[in-house]
Image (cartoon, rainbow, N blue to C red; front, top):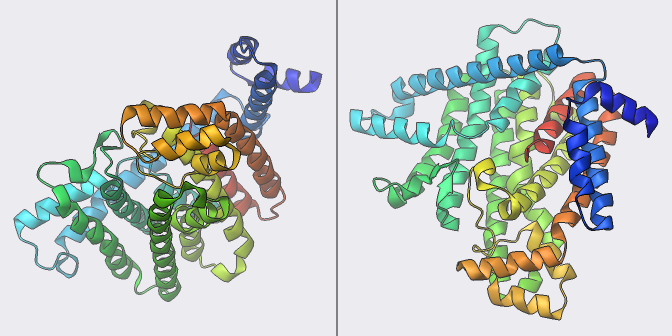
Length: 410
């Protein structure tokens, strides 16, 4: 412990360690103290590992500046891409000015919001793969185009999900379909966003030698994501009849297809193709990214219930919507007869009292601590897997993905 303490003292910002230890000392339950202490140790080790043991404030600030510059270039690429598409008759099918304004408004409202992690991951991955070689403006722009294609796809999924879930807010704004001038025409807008992706890829990449493999990738991911959404809806209808049907195997299947492929594998696969690689050479990388996607979705389910809406940008509705979430799956495994009765009577109902009753069962079952223990275990496994990766560029790509997930709640 002495060596770790010395390392922490020299690398952790002033006051951080003492504040964390003071918070631990205030906890009344010894078991909780041990769990929180382990969690704090993991976070401190992660801070040291990701920032580098010899890195100072200047290096950290430099990395932050580069990330901000990349984000700004990515956002500028969106404006260029949108303008080019709206002026392209092959894309807009001879839009009237009114139609063009509607599409522009719909894009601006739904596509560039949020953290943009998926799109920026294409840029980060591509730049790491190209490290040591010059990346000109046009190469960078093409990486941005594929990054925005993923954000387009994400926007399509969110527009549809919000309607299905009867959600109210998204990214600190009203959901698109909740706007008085939009309503259920948002369904068509969601389909249109998805169709845009194919048109964009054809417009910018049809002359590239990897065009066919790129199209096959997007068709495959599109099918997998749609299948995941279908599994989610079918499972929800089934669970509404009998909560006992919510099981971890079915949950992982939904998550794998609905989230993991397009959120984690697709950005890296796009970067690999841009760099001239063959995707068949990166099967193990694909498996690690899928595993990260499952971890990400479990965290998302946890935040839906226990996260601060001011931090995560939305009000969670998984309980009200009868979702097959990680929390209800765990609860069905652990609940006693009385707790099971409460879950059956209240899960899937929108009244605040019912939601509170379900959350109270979650707390009685210590699901928050179970999540922290799960997160710590999976995180350590992923770190070990990443550190064993021989390709430096791939290793750094995976580190970026893991860092984004791990810091997401902060």
